[in-house]
Image 1: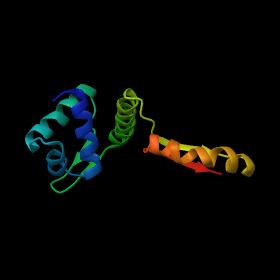
Image 2 (image 1 turned 135 degrees about the vertical axis):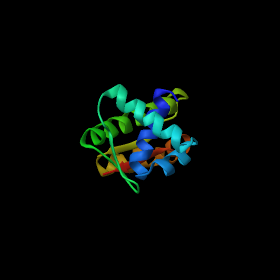
Image 3 (image 1 turned 30 degrees about the horizontal axis):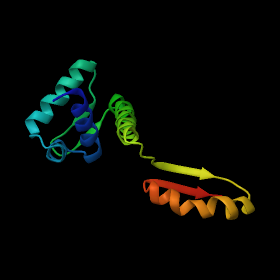
Image 4 (image 1 turned 180 degrees about the horizontal axis):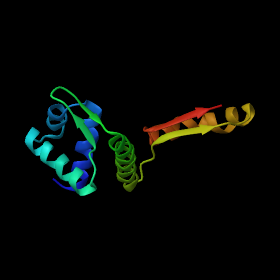
Length: 123
């Protein structure tokens, strides 16, 4: 399992609160997931997850690492989407009513048809 797969697995474990569920989501066995997280914790030199027989919770260090991993994975997905020229996300525009009615609103249907993953909020 490479570092990126391990990050995805770690995020999934925290999100699901379970090694078994996260392993199934990621298409690996529970022992593989356990070994990957143990290796990650050894490499980082800190415990990321507090384990019990029924639940898994991140430690304080694990919570901070989880936030960073989520941001890294989101940036990677944005980079992948941007590689083909796709535009995605939320655009907030505050504009005078006359300009909105005469310039922006007429162009909006074509823009949204061309970039369906784009969300526009006019104010």
